[in-house]
Amino acid sequence: MPDDDLDDATATWVAPGRVNIIGEHTDYNDGFVLPIALPMTVACRAQRRSDGWVGVRSRQRPGGQIDLALNSLDTARDYAPGWARYPIGVVAEFVRRGYPLGGVELRIDGRVPIGAGLSSSAALCCSVAIALRDLFDVRVSEHELIELTRAAENNYVGVPTGILDQSAALLCTAGNALFLDVRRFVRSEPDAYAQIPFDLGAHGLELLVIDTGHPHRLADGAYAQRHAHCAAAAGELGVRSLREIDSIGALDRLDDPVLRRRARHVVGENARVLDAVAVLRSGADPRRIGPMLTASHASLRDDFEVSTPVLDAAVSAALSAGAYGARLVGGGFGGSVIALVDYEAVGRVTAAVRELFARTGFPEPRTFAVVPSAGAHRIS
Image (cartoon, rainbow, N blue to C red; front, side):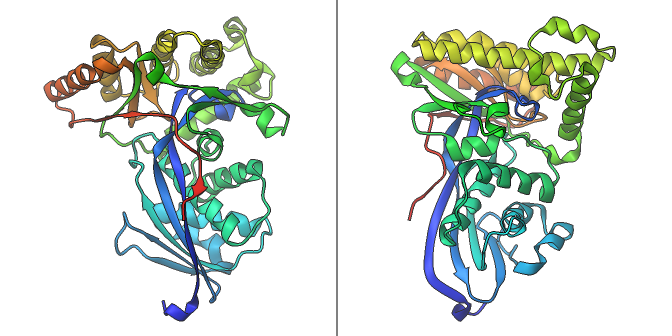
């Protein structure tokens, strides 16, 4: 691309990955979630182009350069490589909604582990979205940015996600967990979300992430199948979404045992989110949410059936080494586990997980502690 096709103005925006403290597979059921933003981010360095084309480059995909005309974005989903459909989809959604964009060059550098269940994809989409918003001075609300970035992932990548990951990337603040009521947010109702103080260090605790090294792939159909199961269960129960069911006993009306299990997870998980928020808001010892994390994992494993042997092994090892609670995080089918541990126990828990993985032939896991970090923002 000739240099004279680029404008001089350039800047960099970042958006974080996330871990969800609790509230898995509840977002697309209009439920409750409680994520934090990670210190690891995806950066988008953006610059206007004068030729009406969109260029996408990624430091993680050397040689994988994509250039296409701004008016041909809709066809890109048919031939662009998977990684490029995320940023292209975001640009296309801005255009589809009538926002005045011009040509743009997007340079991506991702530091959120890919396939670890830490929402690298939403971080990518959100970093591009705020770059386009600021670069072209687009007047768009946070609410629409979240819907726009979700639509990019739904329509251009084919993963029917809810709004958990995008909301975490855009709304989280440093030092806090984000308590999001998805139904209220989607309806643009007041008090749809709140920042909940989450200072584990003050209690001598760490939130440990265990990246199992087994990547998850949500676009292979299993995630969409769970989404369909939940929609079918809601339909049989005569409600718009499973959020409207607040009693496990009400699920006895479901004849299909699979649908009953899927719904039982969602209803139980919503209750666990509310219980965890109540503990944290009260200022009580955060160790009290540990059993809720473990119960969430058991439900994801047995009722929602999205766990794997390697995830179960990581949870088991962490608990046996003294974690107060542990569970898979993200959509499942691989990825990462979180564990709530004493600061002094981080080494012991890490060693226990590595030893079990070595004995069972799993790849060596990567472990690291995380703190609640800032949402998407411009850095230069």
